[in-house]
Length: 105
Image (tube, rainbow, N blue to C red; front, side, top):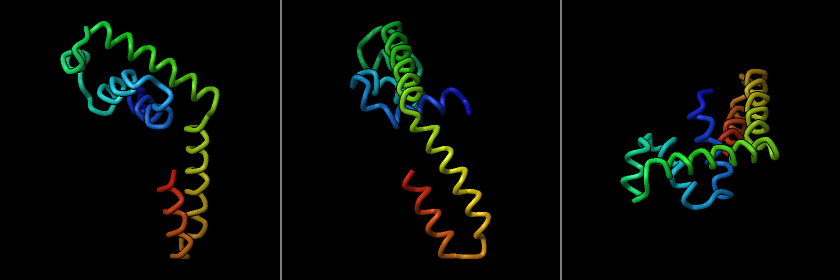
């Protein structure tokens, strides 16, 4: 998985634990694909301040994942559900239920 995707996902999971500024900058950078300069212009802060906020947010998000492991756990559940899906591939109701569970993750 690319680093951009990983941080974007971690921001979705743990973003509420960041400051509002860090959460918004991280979302703009990773989800909105804005450059540091564009974010600086939009927020009225320097490019370096944007970079500092991103570094702090990335460190915090990785720390939350290391401590709580919610993303890793959800990936393990999805993998197991994929195996289950294959095992019950001829049972339409079971497949529908599996798909509903995956959407909840």
